[in-house]
Length: 274
Length: 310
Ligand SMILES: Cc1ncc(C[n+]2csc(CCOP(=O)(O)OP(=O)(O)O)c2C)c(N)n1
Image 1 (tube, helix red, strand yellow):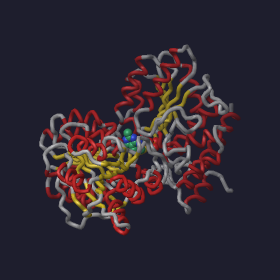
Image 2 (image 1 turned 60 degrees about the vertical axis):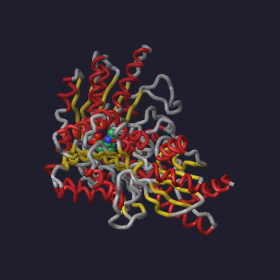
Image 3 (image 1 turned 30 degrees about the vertical axis):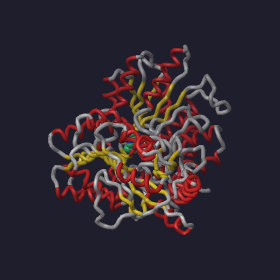
Image 4 (image 1 turned 90 degrees about the vertical axis):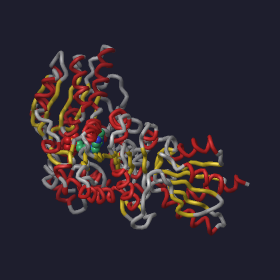
């Protein structure tokens, strides 16, 4: 287990390097929220989810919904690392003609099942997947990653209500609670706390973790799978821009990419010297 | 050259000082929509509603019903998209005195991609009864339009852009809701344009003149109500019309002009815009070229339509 965790931590570090390089190259895209979510995305793709990069549409796969679609770089570097498409494609992020759109687009990118980018819609889609899979008697699971600012959208709570009502215990929502959105602190723009209490009140099983602690992430994902009769929300305390001190906890790095001066320092922080 | 959203921020802050009934709402994009300029000056009349557009529309309706003049802003895709039915029910149906000023309209949003490029908001807003729909050509017209919207009693949708655009109108240009403006006179055909395409039509008309083609440029700042008089005059006098907009050819300016002329004055016509497809990631200028939203396309279409006239 210790080895597994160390292995995942190393993977996440490499994925952070890929995020920084990709965003530096594209000079457009979202840095902070990609770095805060990457540990959870990494644990899902390299530990928890059943999926097959050779056959993206494999029927037996678990499903993933990046509801906070602006964190697309976190998903893209992970899919590339898995082998869904060549990692050179990452250098084409957000370019005209590229299959890597600014926000996830299921029409063009292997491994992407749903179009997201307009916040607040992902959990509804994920619950729809969960309901459909159950109808077919399948035991596949559905995972959705949401932002804490995103929770301000009313549709999220409509989805939360529906998922609990239909006992979608094959659904797991991971809340990337980094405390920041575009205009500043989530608590100051429009307070959503307590996130855990809200999900509990809607009938969800709730697990609180440190979203950068690989051991805790894995334990929570396992516990979510074991929990029957209700969907699980993993409320993960995270740091926006995690891993690169230049970007950490800064709302200004929400949609700003590393520039030429910041790149070497950012890579150094991530233990990358090439 | 300034972005229409920058002009919006400026004039909104001015208006705030002139009329204390004006209140402003935003949905976590106040830096991008430029309502932050107002927020800084009048913090107690600014409400950041968080990422919750539908709630923002309803709240604005409530504010209007107790006598405030709310301006609410977010990106066009989220205003017209996530707020559509709320705009219809809570603003347009009761004729609430609310101004929806949507920024980042069209494909020039750029790299964010198709999910963020609103090419159908004008069509959606135009279809709602009681709604006034305005798409300014430049910064100067934006200032006039925002002032006119504040003075007008009722719901208004103003669509602005993200990027700097060339100026079409001189400083102090007066904007009148529902009135088009002939920017360039001409006799062989008319470019009926809105938003950033008006500046492109001016360039096209200039170049066509050298080829002996006289193109009129009729700028339509208010898509609804449409200035039927000027549109009909242009159709009758020049016998050929090319509409151009940074929007789908379905339901926007092209749709409005086609509907009107089809019933009242059938005219040789062509619509320049986005042809029934979604946007895609890319740089703004690349996308304008990719979708043919530039003077070059207008010149080609003008040559074509003039040859068809004969
Ligand atoms: C419906 C909708 N409204 C507004 C936006 C613009 N937007 C993109 S990211 C963002 C802030 C998201 O904050 P959060 O969910 O906390 O994400 P994170 O901090 O994890 O990046 C906003 C307002 C959007 N994409 N969708």
